Image 1: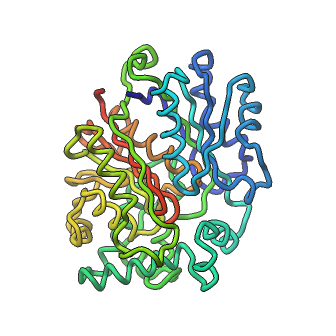
Image 2: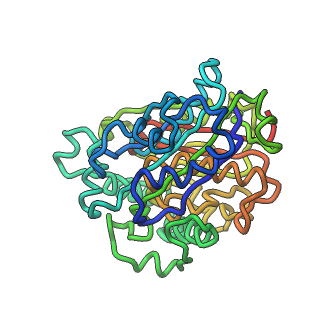
Amino acid sequence: MVAIVDAWLTPFGKRKESLFDLAKESSLPLIRKFRDAIDFVIISNSYSGEFNGISGVNNLISTYLSLEDIPSIRVDNTSGSGGSAVLVAKSFLDSGMARAVLVIGVEKMSTMKTRDVTSVISSLLPPRERSVGISVPSLASLMTREYLDRYRARREAIAEVAVKNHRNGARNPFAHIRKEVTLSDVLSSPVVADPLTQYEFCPISDGSASLLLVRDEEALSFTGKPVYIKGMAMGSDSSHITDREDLLEMRSVKRAGELAMKFSGVERVDFAELHDMATILEIVEAEALGLLRKGEGWKYYLEGRTEVNGDMPINTSGGLNSKGHPIGASGVAQLVEAFHQIRGEAGERQVKDARTGLSLSMAGFGNSATVTVVGDEP
């Protein structure tokens, strides 16, 4: 088993700092404390080539941090890079190849205009689907319409995801968007992909997040309050969205969730951090993971049950929707939030008596998914 013994992140947003300075900002507090123990560095980064014109980013960042004598690799799995990087780190530790692994997730995206960023990200779709104009936002639009029609869900329920996540983000000092919005604000904001509006998509963000992972038997020599990875698994699905039997069946998420929960021995988690690139995804993912009842997840948002003080808190950090989505950093930042929640350090966002949590780091539109279950005990 593996434990997270320290975690840090930068404020997300449109940052003037370089990719290297962002990585330094999130990792330096960990390096200063544990430099002599770190024996591997993993960089979670998806688009340093496209956004920043940089290749070999893992070696460049390691050198910038004066860690050039420590082996490093870069993990790129599009928007699921963070979870994938932690999975690789866990594998190194489980196999005995490393004793302490520093995972740094980082992305600087604000160098491009929104249209160009959307084009770069949508390049993960197969050519035949891109050629007819499909993009990731348009897939979210199609999913929303199918969900509303199939389950006779209320449109306001989808928008309430954004209301809730902006309320949480307003209480997160690291969030990109730190202001609350009303249901009217969400529904009246400009339409991005009908029927979804601007407030229902994540902003384009820069930022970085870092974790230090060690084997569980050594965790208490690093901190008195480790957070243990109790179960972790990855699932996959076709990149051809049009080949999937059902747009609302996120098979990669379901498979990863079932395995991670089985490995963890946990029956029900106390909170979850999900991949809400668009509001509809939070609901569909929560249903696929069994956190909310299938076809009825939308009702939980109208009843306030996914709030910080609800019976299934989701995205206490503000999620990608409010906290922001610097792609390489997002999956790592989800576990930073879980680390603070379980240690009782989440401030105004603290879930009462949180002992177990779940994070979902998803690549593409469910092309692959990594689910991590964490807890306060091995």
